Length: 434
Ligand code: AMP
Ligand code: GLY
Image 1 (cartoon, protein in one colour):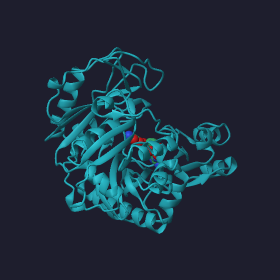
Image 2 (cartoon, protein in one colour):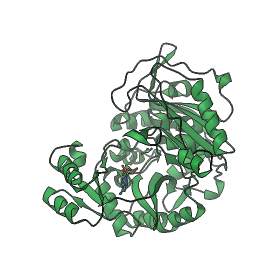
Image 3 (cartoon, helix red, strand yellow):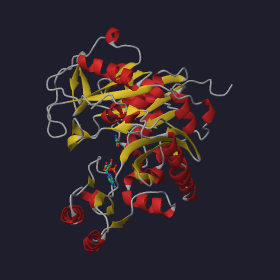
Image 4 (cartoon, helix red, strand yellow):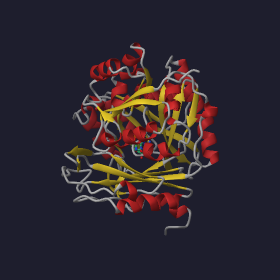
């Protein structure tokens, strides 16, 4: 029978997203050896690790080749945009993650904007600029409020939502002339500010076939009630009911179908996650952004909802043979609360000792996901701003949240804080929050 050989798997990355991937892959009976590079303190408790940086492309290719790995799963976008998947495929190693051409959908918002326009995918009106005078003229004439985006990768910080046109012009100037975001800001996208509620739609794409994972919702702001500075994400839950069946039908028909057809026309053989950030507006769902990897922390609530074999699914996609009928998604809920170090997203301390619950205190259907941690002796220390993700699953959203918050109470380190209102929009809709 095909596929009876065990699969040796290399996961690239070191955050919460990669820890969730490791935990999902570990459940598979198909798994042989599992290595994560460069990993973190918690991942190191779940599998072997290596010390090659996620951005050392030649180092990862050498590791994959010499270690006899069958499948490489790239967590982050940067290695993909540097051509990691192309190089591995050239060596005959299967990869879950797109080649450099596909990764451009995230690495260049200007490319993405042109792509969306070319294939008539609903998105905000807008234009790309490298010339400040032309950008200023466009901003001044625009009949709508605008958003200014650095085209290149900017670790989630390259979007400015100005209060008025003067602020918009200043932001454009800082990017194009002031070197804000370095090379990533040498081209900008100026686009219409959209109104509505956001949702993240994660697709696992294999050419023209795909699995749509449950819609999720991230919480970007550091403070309760969505206040304060932007972060990498303070929590998430899935499924997000704001993405109703009607919304998802609209997304499938008007966003996903033309996007996958467009990729094919462009000659892009896409195999990996396509993250479609949408704004649910009065005139339908519109694309806010594409990412070419799982969201973090969205991945941490989606992995537990994949009931079928996640490794088999990623391996099938990597090998170009997705069979949608084999994939089973739970009809339950999952929630994650991210525990951060005091000061985050500004300057924060590292090296605090983390007190974690014993395995026997972690209920079924709950996971402790490590993000910014490192192992030191027998201890786990904080090593990042977003330190841990406490994940709960359950038959209802409140069950999932209760489990996640219960784990928060059993976990501590000096200066730890977390948002106590994850899923507040949904809870309010359900009448459970004023
Ligand atoms: P991006 O990096 O493109 O995801 O943008 C980061 C965040 O900026 C998004 O999650 C939205 O909250 C916001 N954003 C981006 N583009 C727009 C837009 N055209 N209208 C309103 N909000 C936007
Ligand atoms: N949670 C948003 C992202 O991963 O881009």
